[in-house]
Image 1: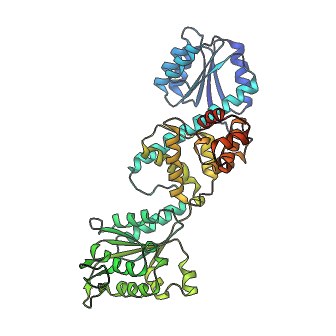
Image 2 (image 1 turned 90 degrees about the vertical axis):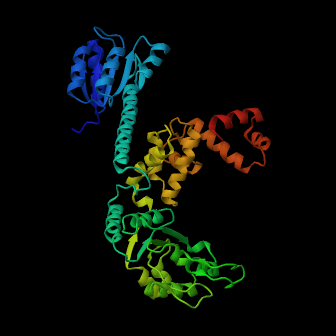
Image 3 (image 1 turned 30 degrees about the vertical axis):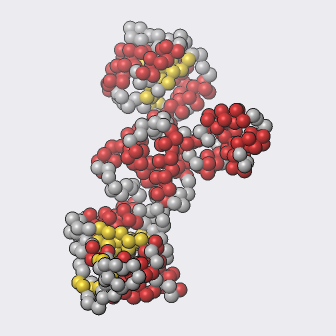
Length: 438
């Protein structure tokens, strides 16, 4: 039998020890039940337990002291205190000493099983979080591409292999998949790493401006050309130029670009003399260039010149195993103490991410701001995530109310009208907006 988790149960009342053990074993947990807290400490020294339940009132060592000792020996263990003598003061003290929660006797067995499932999910998530942090620490942070995906690892392996050469590389991938980051990685792993890396967004410039941007111009070449100006290729001499959104380059500029790639020579706009430039070109696109070639909007000879090596980045929805790692990376980079709960982690893992990594980064940054250092909860995510979560589980009354208020606020012309539609006064609406962070 595969157990969910190993649990240490310590209580000096034999009847409770036996019945709680049976209850937890019926739920699929492996339970070590010990009546003497000193013997329990010996067990903690010999074995790593996932979860521990300690009774508060025991001898010769009470649950609070056992908690302190266990935390020193096994800080990874998630500890719960049980007591029939509960008080606010002892609950607060237990939390300060590192207890995850506080359980009052008597309790129903079904309630205990559900509670333990929740504790185990927290423990599992915390264990995964530690592993992610350790993996990120090994990687050294920065802008390194973070992945566990076999497909991405294959792309990175090929990128590393071609980095040492001057061969032209074509990177394909949806918007937000990290094309510029991959291009920069190739540059930094190449012999050109100490020289310029320059990005040109071909879609952001008109045809005449793009030609001048790439090749430069001389004074008087066109209206506004008040002095000579070198282009991006010259500025990146002995370095790398990334031509982002290469599929949007106009046909006339495609011809000049092809000529440059063949000869490594260029003419500034308005100039007849040629200049020799040593630059590596990496092109990136979110379009299907083969289809553009078939439809005649992209030159076939330029396509094959650019496509010496093709690197295709998979969308985030096809590498969902990377989502927890990326979320932790963005959290660590923000410097926040916030962490994501199991329900948030689940919905982040199932969302389709049409905007890919860039969209994920934006969602995490938004959640960090709204959480104010506390745990990131469902209401810190945009509404579409909450609706996705609602499609997998019944909504609580608070969640239903929050989503209904959001819908009304969108259609109402002002807050007074929204309050009228909801059948509440404006002051109540103000309190509910504050409660739900709206």
